[in-house]
Length: 383
Image (cartoon, rainbow, N blue to C red; front, side, top):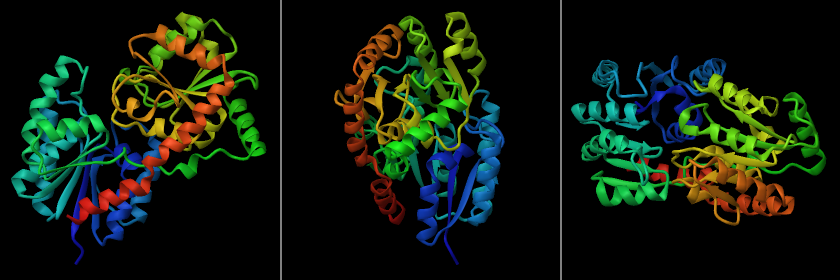
């Protein structure tokens, strides 16, 4: 009989976007894979995508378990209810080990695993406590992570800053590093000139962007943490009608971003595309990738943009610093739209500089290839 393993996360989009290679690897290794997550609420992708994802899991013979797991620790009663769910599940089914993700879901799953005596692997997709993080984050998250690290058999970190911190201050049995969740650069390679020109026209036509315009692109959830409002303010300060800004993503800040664009007088230059399932063509149509987040682990969207050969202007934060150096783009303070505007002016004044940045980024992101990450995960799963 196959050994059973459980992958747990607060939301299904975490499994869909970051863990499908792990599921395939586990099945290849002979495990029966179970997934525990919330398929109905809190996801960063569309309901239609989640429905497709459920069908994909069913076709792969992955066992699905609904988990009403919150993404925040308050109200506490929701966390207690979610904890009881995973405790009951692990009491009914014997799992060889659990691989858990996301701060709240990861904490609850590890607590239940400790009660049941189950080996646990935890991937930290960027600690909420980090150099420059709000004091509130250190007060709420660091003590919990410190305590749970004593009950974590393998802690996987996806950026160098978190890895060094975990090695020094946390007490997991083993601390490992992987360069993000891995990327297949081949999916995002520059097409031939004629094909790329066709894709560029099609995408720009779809979103009503003139052929001669400069297209800034961001990919990410419409949340305060992603800081898209900084790009809107920078765009307004540039005072150029030939620059457009396209954001691929959905989230609670959509209406606020639309309202801000209107107040700034740039509503006609901003496009909110919503969730886009296949973003490969979008990258081909863009000129500059802008990633203004306040907090990241090692962002997959930024790696995709680099693999697509885009110059990148990113916030000067953990994760982004690891990916984008002075030969691949520019960095700015996420609190300074004025600094972002200055960085954009530099790139807009030199298309050749952008091309050179893009060539460097394609080479650099090769170190984040999926097969490199999967080799490490195979070692961890075999342990």
